[in-house]
Length: 215
Ligand code: PRP
Image 1 (tube, rainbow, N blue to C red):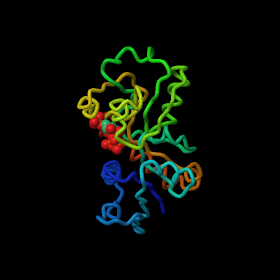
Image 2 (cartoon, rainbow, N blue to C red):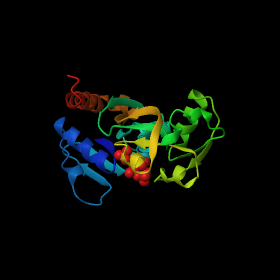
Image 3 (spheres, rainbow, N blue to C red):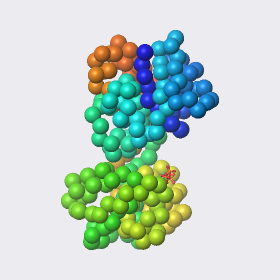
Image 4 (cartoon, rainbow, N blue to C red):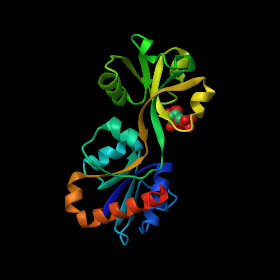
């Protein structure tokens, strides 16, 4: 039996679709209910419906053998696990954003305050890449509000279509990383359940490559 941690929401739906294309029976996972554990003994699969930010934790501790989660969460959580496939969906960018007039002038702002849901990614980027110390203000959503209301000069956040930025007079100032959904595996499960996990990784990789037209 393999336990798969899914990120509740759109990512879970796309993952189930891909698993089905890869030949896995996901009838249990498609059940419309509020159950958090959906099991199919015949298919040998158990799905747990987790908050995206908790998926790496379930997989690191072995509560789940496999997880599918955004690269943003992996970078932020920094857990000990194997990242094995880039599924190519859930694509977006992690960016430093601010008022449009700051474009090209980011480095000129001294003692910056940065609003973000991602304090670890933000700290690492400013310390390691920009060699700059900034004040990080942790927020839990609607991060774009922060520079508009004067809480911070800039933000570090996900940009997908760019619509939220545009409609609030903000712009991308720098790109930190490209984000997409990744398959992660518990380090012990990878060895102990290799005969179940390895074929799953391979077929997920094949399907992802087909979708992303790499083959
Ligand atoms: C995310 C992100 C941005 C927005 C970007 O927020 O934090 O606010 O989506 O998408 P766009 O570039 O297509 O406009 P989410 O909807 O997850 O809600 P949140 O603000 O509560 O984090």
